Image (tube, one colour):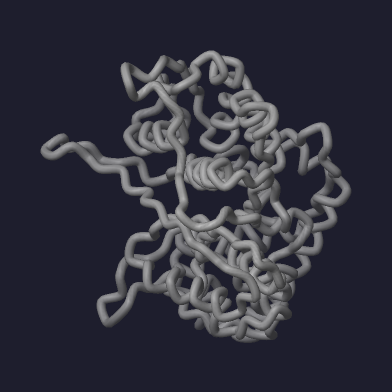
Amino acid sequence: MARAVFAADRYTRRADGFDRWTRRIALSIPVAHPERWDRAVPALTAVLGTVTGDLWEVLFRPLPGKSNRERSFTFAEDCAHDVALFSGGLDSLGWAAEQAKVSSPHALLLVSFEERNFEALQDRVYGAVRALRQRPIRRLTQSQTVRKPRGSGIELERTTRSRGLLYAATAVHAAAAERIPVVHLPENGQLAVNPPLSAARAGACSTRSVHPWTLHHLNRVIAEVAEPESAIRVENPFAVLTKGDVCAVARDVGLPQRVLEATLSCGTPPDRHPAGPPLAHCGLCYPCLVRRSGLLRAFGEDRTPYAADPWDPTLNADRSRNWSALRRWLDTEWSVLDLVADAPLPPDAQPARLVEVIERGREELRALIVWADRRAPRKAS
């Protein structure tokens, strides 16, 4: 299901929509038990609407012929007891490192997706986790490539807001094969809630793949589709941690600063650098700014090679827009009203805790601005 959604997301250009963002997408998916998926449609369309900002119509039909049977991952080794998403980013690294240090005979299963041009970086970060291990660790790596028909002239959509759903669904699929009841999607509370820096970025204009509302409806989908005794729950173990907190977790379990700086956090990684390996971080997007603030909080510095610094006075207004928006956002009050106005919250949410983690994250970002202002060159008068 998630692969079909992801393919439809890539094949449907936002530029063709009436507002150059919102799309109407109708999708028919063959499944083994369409009656179960029919029950899940309300929750599923809520998930899809939240993460992509589009209007979805999803229909399910029976798998044809002999293919109408259960298919799942199978493993030759003993079943794992824990499964988590491992993207190669700071948050997934922190959780994997913490779990690798748990002394246990039972395996930890990490689910990864290939990042084009950055496979070596992902392997290096995974190697750092394995160096800490006090338990068996396995890694399942999947592809996220959507291929274009030859000669079609199709230009794929670049926003890929449904990518997080593909990641989560794959981890759930693996957990079902391993009979694991909980899947962990580690994401710091700042970026899980991902409050918009301006009113122009409301809703799915910012990534919502681990937002509490998304996880609530994703768990509803699983509950409708799965057998009652084998239902899996998706959780975010870092929901009340800031980026700085996550960096401190990774640091305190023994990961050196250079390993944290080798992770991939950028929302729009730059193209391959002409003089060497690819640069993993633009330095200008909101995830890069949050990353900078977290590493600064944990280590007092950030030595990550970025393509640009947002405080560079030679940058044009378009390239420095996130930095300018961040400064304006931090100069305004932010409350529970802003939290619920941006996206709904599930019934079991604790708004006060979410507001608290956002406010602590804002303090980390303010510290980054103070640090940057001391280093920023002055514009010539």
